[in-house]
Image (cartoon, rainbow, N blue to C red):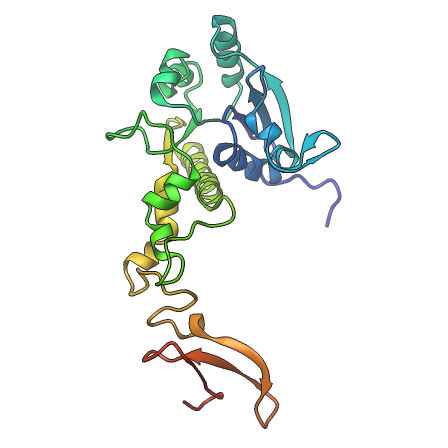
Length: 268
């Protein structure tokens, strides 16, 4: 491998004006592949700076999410801050935000205003519930998305309540889907006749819902612990016991009871 070989997204400029996790992680994924990511923070700092475990006075989570980024501060509440952000956006390929619609309108940071002087700009708006509908002005975060998408309802055991994941599932799913959507938008812009960018509406609950689309179309739409009604491998628990020929075989839960019946390879 050539040491000086450019990464695939080298030359792509991304403005990360989002906070906490889903939006910033989207920018991080783009930065991992060479994009020039500028992290714009409020003068008070991103809340993620104080999250999780600390080492030498710094949040480890902040260091993880902020890798490959160049941090600056701007106060969007002031006319000067808004003016500077618009000038910065004129140089960008992608802008990522995660504030509510009325807040962005108040700050004059909308797709319409930003793309006026930069028609090729792609704006990604992360939100809890999207840009239209009855919940559009409500704040949203990962836990709500995991519940409203139905994920919590199908996660856990039948004799207990719904279980939420022990990590930021909805935020990371949104970040991955956002990175995918951003690259599709970039490809479309670079191959279209007018070279115009576009606006990406990225609700967290929709991204989380997409991760469990299989559950909604199969029999696995209820809490059943480690099992599913049809997918055999999901019920398999491989043990240390071996068959006479030396191969390991799984212990499978019987469909007719909660007991585990052992089945050797090729036999039931």
